[in-house]
Image (cartoon, rainbow, N blue to C red; front, side, top):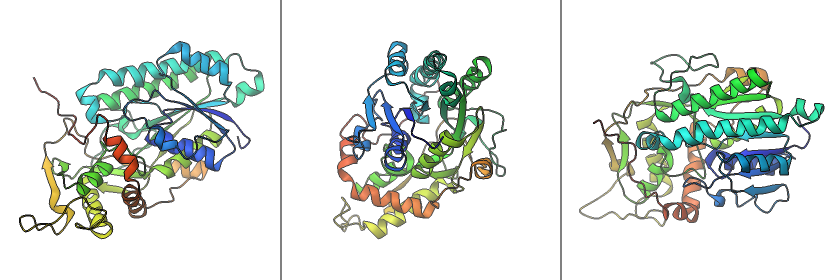
Length: 369
């Protein structure tokens, strides 16, 4: 699938989706139809570098709108779809699961039905090369103990409304292939980080809170472990799977970078101490006699843990390496440094994001009554 394709990317104004769009336009011959509802996490500034390219177009559409989805397929006649549109934050799913059921389950169903109806109209050759690529998460597998890795054969055991909704969407994609023959491929990734990340997530939240002298919230004891994947590595992997992955296969994508949450926060503080020390032009806080400030780490604050917080995620990405030859290019150290530097150099982007409804407040404290 190396020749030029026309690809619908759902959620292409979001964090991972925008990285995929930028990669497709800047590094491949493919054309992109970016389908995004532009919820709070959708940001067209994240794709400003490619918006004027003739191979790119944008459609503001809700994936739950069956009529609009059908129009998009009919109008654009795509060769495939990369489905990234989703409600994605665990804490928000605890506060309000309904949006996650609507978008992640019903939205995926609507896309599958739209794709199936369109696919059935295609001539034989185009029908054979069509691809519905569903992008999911390792959180569908639940929580690991101190050892072991998630593989493509790990049983599903989602523990949050978010992960349950993504697990349901994974199963729908599988069912539409086995029942109707729709060509599909599914990928499940570990925690992403990098440029253009909405600041409710751990790494950008810590960076921006630190620069503003706000508390750096660490859930529970901070010993939860995540496998971190640099978003541009993930974008390369997703496009590679779309082009070369086998029909009906699943591929786990991980960064081989297991880190405790507290160690991630401490690493960010160390980079900021080096790159934006307190009192410098990059820092928005000043040391005083009452607040001497020697390190951003002094802002770390342990807070109530998230309800049902999974202890450890870690991906075995051996299959995608063996079968498709993909490996991440960034280590956690190199990717984190690039990420911190990007936020320091792109204040205009995150200021515009923070001028909206999200101001860095704590989400996901569920009532127990």
